Length: 306
Image 1: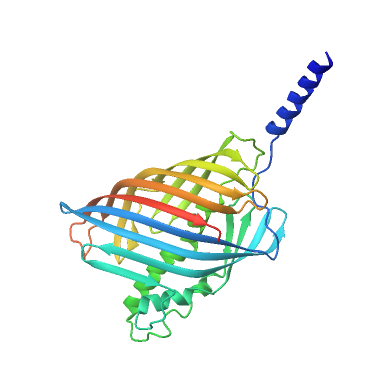
Image 2 (image 1 turned 45 degrees about the vertical axis):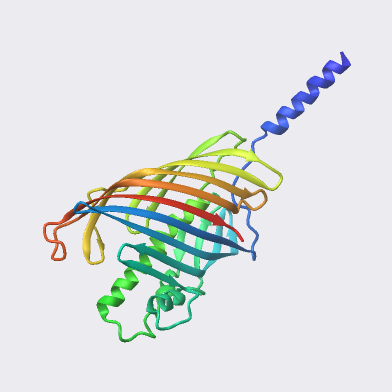
């Protein structure tokens, strides 16, 4: 009888231990700096007037987040782009720009370098939602001081592209893809929850992801995500390179995320994205009569903390 009671007691303790709910989320230290290292490789396939065109694009960067304060569940962080680079391979050539380049004859790389090292502020909840971005305009000041020879239209085009890639709207969506992975509710392994993220890098889309708390180890928690992407308003045109264009795209995004047990910061993450649909250019002087372009985008993104 004593042995039976001891066994029953032990099993009860085990059930309590392994079934105990915990609150996942960020537990960052004030004064500490955390890093995101990102690399994104995309294959963009477009069909224009019956001819297939493939673009291979790679974007990478290193961003520092210094925790300056915390009020209740809201973190204040000083954010700095430390390194940025982009490359594109097309049928008619190749483009490579990087903030690491010091050759001032490379105008776009030099302009990209002016964005790095300039801190701005964000406010983020302990579940990873970015609720405010401050002083980001200062990052884009004095971009063209070294290049007075650029025309106004050239300056506008370059700034438009950089703002789409690194501006406030793009920043919130791209960061939340990595940070907004938590729920307000305590969970146990096996539990799932849903997070909606707005993506605004060149086009507006909604990402709805179901996350699952998959595994707990001594060093990290494993979270997996399965998401659906859909352009926000398929009837809304945006300006791109001086032309009105709208997107009608849908697809999937799957992620595998390891987060530090103590801080909740992402240690390692891999994201696979596949979307397809059409891009429609409205009738304009550059494209008389307009144009509908079938397209697909396949992307693999990796994130790290070192």
